[in-house]
Length: 387
Image (cartoon, rainbow, N blue to C red; front, top):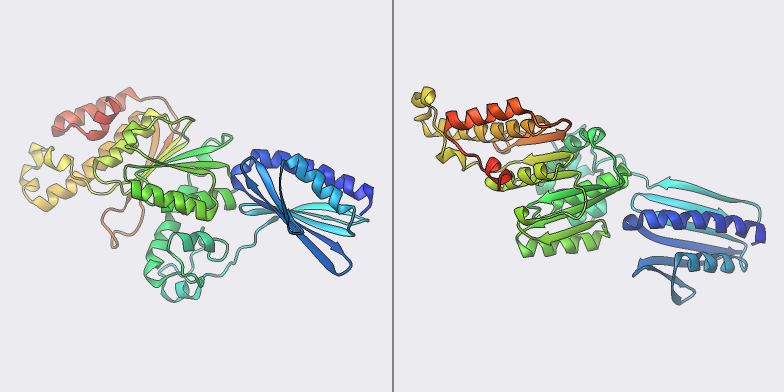
């Protein structure tokens, strides 16, 4: 290749250096194919310990990005043309160069628009436009156990796949109202095996092109180790996991979103309290069992109704989530409560979504205190907030 073309390639590579520094967590690799006549010569570079490990012609070198740029340009002198691909999660940047032209373009990785036959035959959402699409998201779906190695969604996992995708849909509805700082830090409280964090990481990074960082908390060492291994397998470097009690966690950076999925009983309250204390921009919770207020509350006007255990239990569920929602509103959050999935699948199907958009409301706090007094309850959420 001539000097003029190589100089243009060098300028493009300087731009990629800045991009690498900004997007290191989602960088995958750099590949280059040099051509002479009908022969191709391929090199590949991967990030390793602050260096690019570059393999070409059977030799591997550890280079800085500046060093790699020099290497790529010096090597191009010996060939007729080159095609360089800079790969990030969800995006490829292509540089094509020969003695006549040098051009660079972004390529979004194509999605397969059709859903697997196994879904079309059995899913209750036949016409659903999935947010997490079969095809592009296969590696993720296989890692979380929803898809077989052959690329088919498992029949007994279709319901889970639909639930996960609907969660993403409800999450997506909030995105426009969440401040777009440089990076959105998302805290998953009681993360378990972190399936939803992995799915949201994929969606935000590779579909929406939003910079994000996920932090998973759980007190079980086994699930934390599993999550770390899955993140490694997927190449999701923008994730960290900690074996710690939620109420003991102190973040290093501003937390944009706190989420909690099916955290048992007052574990949901711990997550909500942490989100409020951290002044997070958004809080999302799908509560699980509701045991706390059932043994506390009493209301004389309803005495003849609440003598039936099933009514008392259902009312406890409503009171628990209702008072959670009211306290979030009192703390300056705009709250919406929706059915996450059909009640035919599970009665524990409520999702609480809260967006911080105002200061604390003293009138609502007074209303909350009046309810505490009238019902003779002391909710865990209020207790955690005042520890």
